[in-house]
Image 1: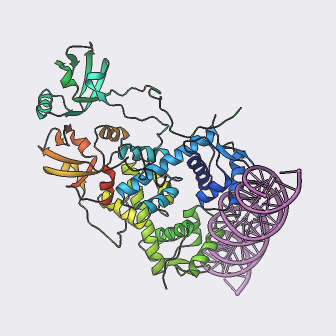
Image 2 (image 1 turned 120 degrees about the vertical axis):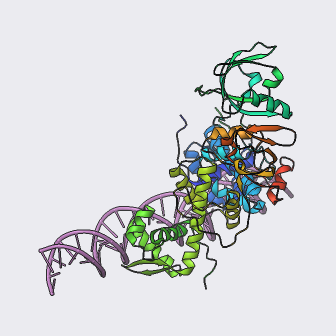
Image 3 (image 1 turned 180 degrees about the vertical axis):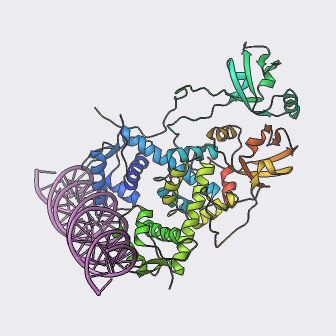
Length: 242
Length: 242
DNA sequence: CGTTATATTTAGGCTAACCTAATATATAAA
DNA sequence: TTTATATATTAGGTTAGCCTAAATATAACG
């Protein structure tokens, strides 16, 4: 139902400024604050507030101030996320100083796609804060990571992704069993205690729980829609009174 | 006389189009070609050609066509370099398809700084071509970094620069293992077959060859500004909210 | 409660980069 | 050489996002 508005860079920039201004506290953003934040004149802000209000992205009461609607907050959060991730990227990876990184992030954020930024986030190890220390909002799209330890999965088919262990022995032992990344195995029984029984092509193997912990696996490709979507937005409260 | 014009994105875009049109051969670019290339009307091109001519960036003869001056060529080359490196980055690292990567590169190229792009180029191992196969012009200020794929290195310590893979899954998995840019790992064994065993602080991990190919690393840790900062991530307070 | 100070909005302009339609030039064909 | 066709330019219009200056609303004070 939230329709896909094509927002201009400027419109996004204003939404982001409102987001920043009311971050945390759920108060309205004033024309003055926004003008200062954006480096434009008050009159320009008023103009834009009217437009954003018409688009249903903010609740705007003349002479009183503006507040993001739920729709507006969603967009602002997304943009802010991009901004902060880009800062992280520009500072950590590209070695840019913080002032420059802010400036550049301000522009790139309106251009880079959701998909690109999500992948980039993954690349950076899903950092939780920007270089200035502010929290990076989470993505509203599914995180495709679906790796778990063999010791924790239910019955079914899985592909071995990695062997990870503090002890070198364990790894060589697993390797000698033929349990190497890429192999598909079938988990047979998962009693809460005792060894785990898995089946490879033609062999059955029983693994101790501790050893099974060293095996990172992902489910054999089967599409399960919308599993993990219980994330919270770390955003200012969207006010939709009435 | 050539100097520090603040060029708009549009102006740069036109210079780049002229560059592309006359790439290699030293012929003029016609209004028509440029209009087609840029997706605008002929009249718009004429307008811009006059402006660029006044700025000394092209030689323009009405009804005949345009050609880059030395100053214009320098700028165009720089922009084109950014464009192609960004495409490489968006495709290889961010997993974006080529059409989208072109579109996004077209915008980011006017915004990202020379310094940022040079560092990014180093991070990517100074690729010589864009995903479409066209050559990436060199920077006028090169620095040297030695980046290779984890699957190809000898025993020793390396710093992870980037995860590159067509599949987002692979990236997610690497991340869930803590294998993210900035981390230093020690390569333990490099038998020509079987998994590659690497060691991080306290863990051993076996990686399949194919996965190891997705990891761009450089020998030992070079202390760069960004990397130092990355380790202290999350600590500082919000002096400058992103 | 009226007066003053501050914040906000309205009114009217400007510019860059597009557009369409009309006109001018160049080129190829007769 | 003349004409038809393709290409380029000019003239004039539109829009977004900014601006300044003037008008108006709200808040703060004596």
